[in-house]
Length: 210
Image (cartoon, rainbow, N blue to C red; front, side):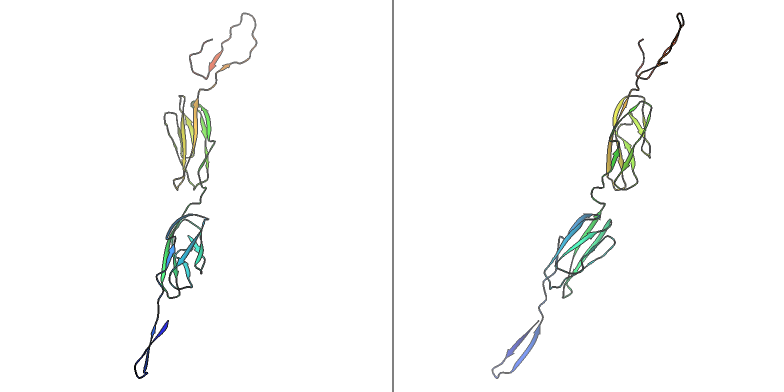
């Protein structure tokens, strides 16, 4: 604020008060996407110092209360508006969107496995956000139930197993359906001369040559 004076030829004086307002307040960056646990610096320029900061939703994230350069801390998923107010009550704002924590990739275990025809195998998933939706790239190779239990078809082949969390993060594994090994039953026996014995072959792919 300043005072303006006017003086006439007889030295009579008049005065007026002039208040100069600061320019608008700007916030940089104005829009940002963060992961849970991240921090981000915001800067206020323009207006008249000091600056006071608030977050519209402190459950999503909090911001340091004062300063031209402050730090925002992301707490949980959601969106919040940061508002900065200068000494003359001019305001500026920024929008912050917080998403799932970085590094929350879905991991499927094991990442590669061979399963004999018509057999089952239990896959597991970790990371990301529970719960998982399971799928398979080729239903001719086998099927997988909502709990990650794979059932191999009666033909050989390979496919990709996927586990997708509630945020759309996807983990993958490879499954190969293979022939079961050939076995002979009995695998060891002692017989007397002239005795007949029947052996049975299983597994592999028939027919068998003896």
